[in-house]
Amino acid sequence: MSTNLDQFEGEKYLSLQTFRKNGTPVDTPVWFVQDGVRFYVYSLANAGKVKRIRNNPHVKVIPCDIRGNTKGEWLDANARIVDKAEAERAHNLLNKKYGLTKRIGGLFSKLMGRERTTIAIEFG
Image (cartoon, rainbow, N blue to C red):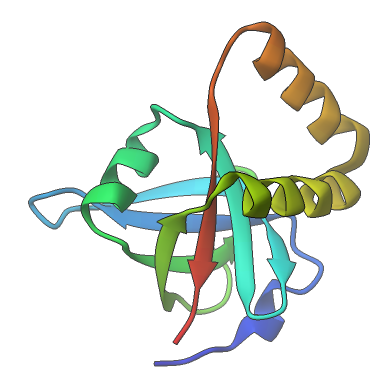
C-alpha cells in the first residue's frame, strides 16, 4: 500500500471514496486537513458517506479539485467517526486551514440544527 501523502500538500480538496454494501464506489470531494499521517474531514451526520463508513471503514483518497476531478494516485485508508474531543481538535485545524469560510459554514449548520460528524482517515 502506498502512503504518498506529499501529493496532498497545498491541496484544498480530496476525493473520499466510500463503498456501498454491494461494493460500488462513491466518490465525494471534501475539505480536509492533515494532522501528521491522519486526515480529518467533516460531514453532516446523516450523509451517505457517513453511513457507508459505518458499514465499511475501508476508503480511498486522492487529491482533487472542487468538482472532484482527481490528480495524483489513490491511497487506501481506513476511516472512523471520532469522539467529541478529537472532533474539537479536528475542527480547530480545519478552521485554521479554511478560515472564515469554514467558520461561517459551521455557524450556519449550527443555526439550522444540522448535526455534524468528524471523520478520521488513517493510513497503514
